[in-house]
Image (cartoon, rainbow, N blue to C red; front, side):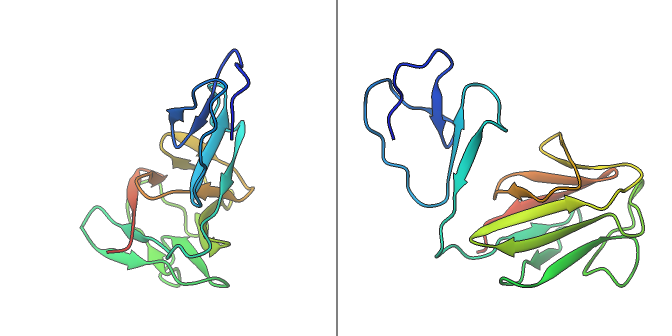
Amino acid sequence: MRDLDSRNGTFCNDKKVQPDQWTEVPPGSRVRFGGKPEAGFFLPDPAARPPELVAPTGLRVGVPEDGFTIGVGRDPANLLCLVGGGVSRNHAQLRWRGGLLWVQDLGSANGTRCDGRTVGSAWEPVFPGQRLQFGQTQVEVAARS
């Protein structure tokens, strides 16, 4: 990839790409244009393993491979059952697809956030190191050890 001396810059994994220099974009990279995180794309790593979700108690839940959706909420039927404040009965969903973890809010009363940014009803990618917040409960997304 190469930035053609744009005004607001091009970033690969939050590192600014130097103007007029070719930069390798490895699988699993996040590319964005300018200062807005939504103005970009993700290059999935097909060999990546699904991450783990780390609850405030330290409990680690592995994300299953493709084709399985994880329910998040107070309802005990959810794989990730959270009883913290502001968590709806069926709050959100997570899934691993195409080398990326995705999150979707299910119209919860108190919302879902990823690193402080509101997650809507459309599926959005999530990366290791980011924090998901369901109501008042935070869950860390960690690379599988």
